[in-house]
Amino acid sequence: MNRLAAVIVLALYSVCRQSSAGSLSVAVKDANGGPVSDAVVYAEGGNSGSAKRQAVIDQRDKQFVPYVSAVQVGTSVLFPNKDNIRHHVYSFSAAKKFELPLYAGVPAEPVVFDKVGFVTLGCNIHDWMIAYVAVLPTPYFQVTGGEGRVVLKDLPPGHYKIEVWQPRLKGAPEKLAQNIDLASGGAKELVFTLDLKPDFRAKRAPGLSNGGYP
Amino acid sequence: MKTLTKSAIAVVLFSIAVSGARAEWHVEGETGFFYDNNLSNSDRAADQEPDGSWKTDLRLVNTFQLLRDLRLTVAGDLQGQVWSEYNDFNRISPGAETALRYRFGLGHLAPWIMLENRIGYDRFHGTARSGWDESAGFRGGFAISDQIAFEAGYLFENFAVPDNFFDVQSHRLGARVIFDLTSSLQLTVGYDYREGDVIAYAVPPRPEIAAFAVEREEVTTFGTDPLYTGYRFPGRSHIVSVSAVYVLTKHVSVSVGYEYASTSHDPLRYENHLVEAKVAFAF
Image (cartoon, each protein chain N blue to C red):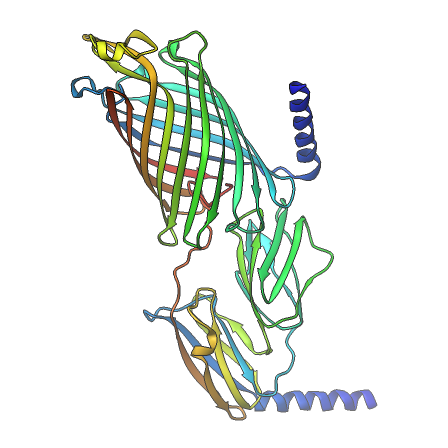
């Protein structure tokens, strides 16, 4: 009987919480008005809860998948190698310095991203393998796809600072920050226009001096 | 003792390669058009013979990451070149290559040094030219920024045809700067200084060349009317090059290149303008 009561209370709480949650739709554009993919949109403030504390970044066909990930600070990230060759994952970003020396399969231990910041990942064997992890102080985030648009759902009512980061962003995300007040059950829309640097990451292509296998 | 040392190094490298690294075979190659405005290396305009060729290079490559910063690359290759007019220069060359690269740290921006060598047998249509083609050298490089990298190196080239007119050796020092202009377009500008044997062809009599030539020989490569004479002598070359690579996919790229070479042995001087357009591929 007590168990049934607890379930009912939880269900009611969940329904109430859902009904009071707001949503934020964000479009991310470049200087020409085109959609920007791989942009991390995140909301700081409100009554920040906790996001999923585990994430996976695959290595498939000598590429990191996904190219851009967003996690809440403290998240454990696993780096399974799904290729039939070995990889050597590393980062020397200030937010997380680590190295997973030459390995195949799934590493025994995940890597805990315990400091807020933006982390660049590389593979020491395949120079074109690059990926990014945005380590955020909030559980409210999404990464844009090809349409350059995300919707942050289930935001509790409150005041938020919305920021956008992309690997090629010129300057700090704070410069573009927008503040909003989200009412209970409210919905807002924002547009961010990013000034992006050209993409000069190492290429996986023959004939290049810094591509393929130098 | 020398043989023992070489054997020991070979055994160590082989053991490390077999025990520590998995095979990562891939095929790469390039094919395209190559033009030389002065294939005869002549100083007189009347003796200069331009020609174009189709050139192909196929390589089966394996890389072994021996240690965190040390990589061994081994490859078997097959090079071929067919000239439009002067068939004596047509060649096919099976060979083997090795390269040992040490990188001072992680990532593609870290400085690196590389020892490399290739040995092949060049079988020419003009069979007298055929012989062992060896090269060995070292290179190093570093990235100045995400967009600009610098490389420099030394190469010893030995085309070994003992007791033969076509036996030539040379030393080459070179440097190049690589610019990533856009996400798909890379530009390379280079300079090389080459010192060593060269063979220049001319219609005799050329007593001023004969005066310093180490050896000379009549050749029918450029026909018999007139008959050319080949002169082998030590020369110095200054070579400037520029090339651009455009990436189409992760497997295919196209490139064009131009090279200007000025070779001299006082009082002789000849120039070459070389143009290349090719497709490179890797799988």
